Length: 267
Image (cartoon, rainbow, N blue to C red; front, side, top):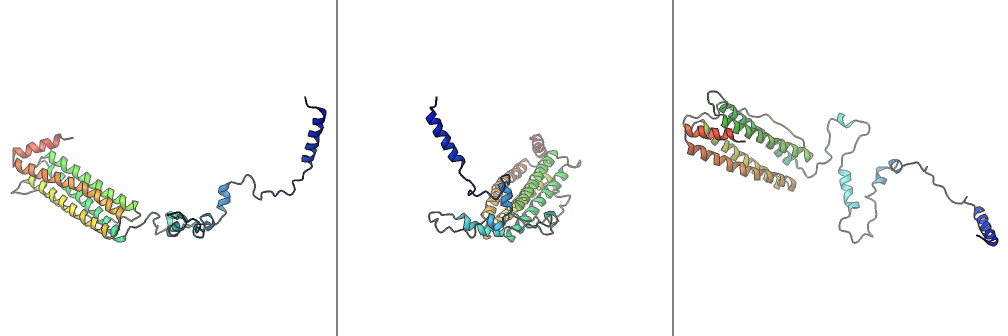
């Protein structure tokens, strides 16, 4: 138990603590239920992102001064109008566009047209070989698949332009002739195969020109993108050349029929 003397001492200490005045302790001027987000919302943008005026002279060991270097990037972001819905603005500025030269943007849009045109011409070849008067359904299947592949390439370039903050400008496509593969000397199978090879060679030239534009504009991101397309195009060139050789060796008549059946049975 606690002795009477200790109890007396405890009561005296409690009395001294109770008599202390806390009136001199300053109270917070902000209510306790006020959130930090609400407090920050009331500050101007310059105060919330105070990076331009911050003193970093004492930070002598750093190699990347974010607070100073990020200021120009903040200034480059187009301002947002609070009074107008962004969907109603006539000229919507990109927020992600960086290092995309207008020349590169125009060249990329031209490549979109090239890929769509290739798809259009392969569709014409597929339609020709699917005629009842031609009846090479394996060739028709092959060129329809080529058409879908070229369309996929066009959409990839289109998506890349949007990803870089550019504006896609589509142009009119040239209409292919309906008798694209007709040839009395070579035969339609070989004429169609050689035309497809020439189309792939032309596409490779267009991609090389696009790569040169990317280099001249100092755009390593675009250079890397086009190099990926060039690698795939090299494979397409090889396959197109190999197919021409096969059709040439098959000759006319039953040889073409055998290749057609092989194409028709491919997955």
